[in-house]
Image (cartoon, rainbow, N blue to C red; front, side, top):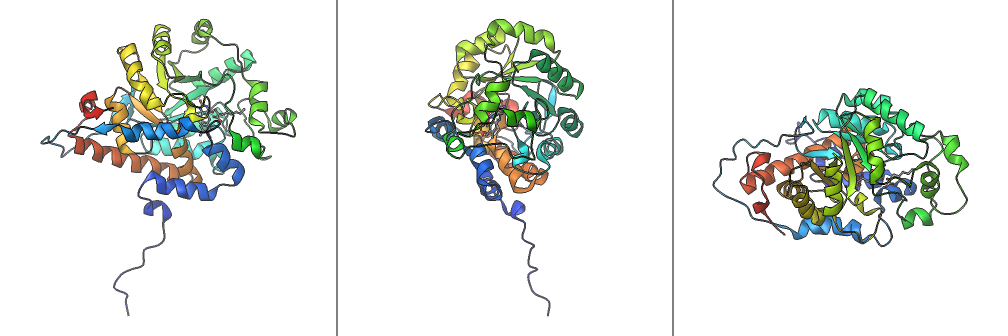
Length: 369
Ligand SMILES: Cc1cc2nc3c(=O)[nH]c(=O)nc-3n(C[C@H](O)[C@H](O)[C@H](O)COP(=O)(O)O)c2cc1C
Ligand SMILES: CCCCCCC(=O)C(=O)O
């Protein structure tokens, strides 16, 4: 006898209806070392929580009786067309999540018409990711104490097809992620940071107490860089420069005056605990910059309405940190693709329900803070 209903094969990715479902899948796939590294914020994690809470507090003021039969979520960042204003933020060590590591993330960004930001501390060399991303990638720089090495990394990123340089400015030191301290986070033996150091070089600075992140970082990253040095950086690359980690109008103005774009971020609550949420910082930065440069935002973005609120208030695009990592841990490239797809679908629906047919129709009047 033929059954009335064909049993559908169990596909956890397709069964996931939102990013929280993907997060649960991703968390379940990780060991403690990786999970704590990905999930942690600094200290009491106030800013980590506040990034989400700020989005939830803001209310929408939807408009009605608008033709939304054909909503277009498309936009562009620095001239690169995106299927929606959703990109992938830089995060170190994708090899902790999946054997395909940054290659899976890059391919998913390409497939989804998105853009990936590759961390200096990737587990995959720049050139390999560049080939997979086919121009849909930006490169994130941690300036190294070794300026010659920094210069060569910048040259490699440009040659590999990066479209922009994302210069992270909120981490002269790493914030203290206490779970990593408690359980002595260390990069597993099979992974390295090939853009900057071999596993053997990383091992040389490991100690027998606390998280090893601070040791790696202390050994490699420059802490002396100031606004005066930006002209030096500008001279090292023809790429547009985006300063990632700006949270105040004052610094946003300086960034624009130095010819840089602005990425509003508190590093996913991983650096200065009790720092303002990215979403709350956005309006003063948009005001201060007054259209002189593009503005991006990350921190706590997990819903289509988050994307809509940020874009309505002046962000050109938002970027996913942990959300992309959970998708990667859940299923590699298809997991990251599903993350992008679910969020884009939610964003499209939110636009329609707000009476916005084009990204350009999203204005601050839609949001009550
Ligand atoms: C595991 C992890 C590693 C990160 N590594 C980097 C990095 O290498 N460079 C960087 O600029 N930011 C890094 N970040 C910060 C992200 O780029 C981004 O600012 C943050 O994750 C956004 O918040 P969200 O995770 O709530 O989306 C990292 C974040 C996480 C969670
Ligand atoms: C030397 C490895 C440090 C990687 C730091 C990456 C990062 O920004 C993070 O938040 O973690």
